[in-house]
Image 1: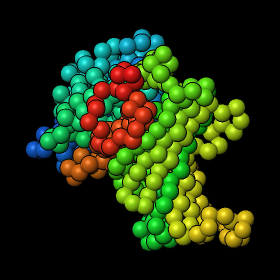
Image 2: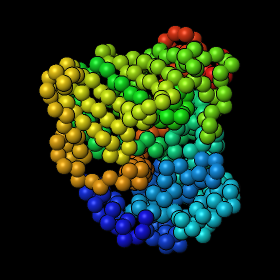
Image 3: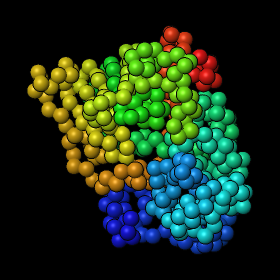
Image 4: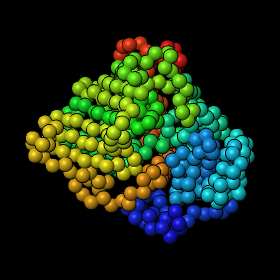
Length: 416
């Protein structure tokens, strides 16, 4: 984004937000000098309570997950952060990233980068899941906080390792589950707490249902929807699901290695139900659609007094209808847009999509570091969303409902 346009965006997007600057960030050299002038990090974790810029090291993997959805460039617009180094095993990708991030320190080995640079925060940016566990554990070993691309990992066993690594420490891990940080999501939750929807009876979510429809859609995009269910209704108690391939229940023969390092994958059609505290039930579905792909991606929330429809992202489309029958054609009730300012109010924020969502997430991570609190999308939230995904396969494997949290921490598809 050109500097002039970036300043305009930040000025507009800054309404209602704190800690975002409307000018360029300091150079890495200036950030190192600034850090050196400050007192060492206080007890409780690197960077806790410090006022100077947090030094960020970015891990990317060109051709094998790249830099996620902007998890590298976001730090240029986070006031309390400056990028100090980047690591990428691909030589050309490394040169491009160093130029893009305006850093001189670029490494082929992320472990060497963390060891030598000793950053405060590590951005684990690759989309591919096969590297997340190792990168996170390397960062935690050196006391670094983490901003991690979703989904969390391939298996619950890997997720458990990551949770165990940070548990009992001041180390914070934040996930790029952007809808959690959205002010529009906050307004939706206010409507629910105020009783505008009544009792929450159902939540209905679907993936993008494109060429990834089925297992890949569940893992990559369903993660967002299932996490949103938890925001609304808390932790699920049970899951009952079926996984199909060409209309037939999946067997061991249909299990395959997923794209982008996902790990074991199966199914081109999935239906799953989750039980929350009575009377709330959540439903998630995905199939490889021929028509209308991505049109349904998001979550609908049905209460005894009304309905909310919600997509995903930093400023998701959100609407409310006060209609206990859920049938506006019959009731003539009107849909009302939900903005960051509230129900039916003009939107004060400029929608810059993923970039704005990343800014909010990174600023929230810094808040969590400085207050020794959990990020809004914490390591525990990341594991819970992954568990909802893998519970689908466990239910299918057992041909029965499964209780959550699951006792089985192995990948269910590897046990078929």
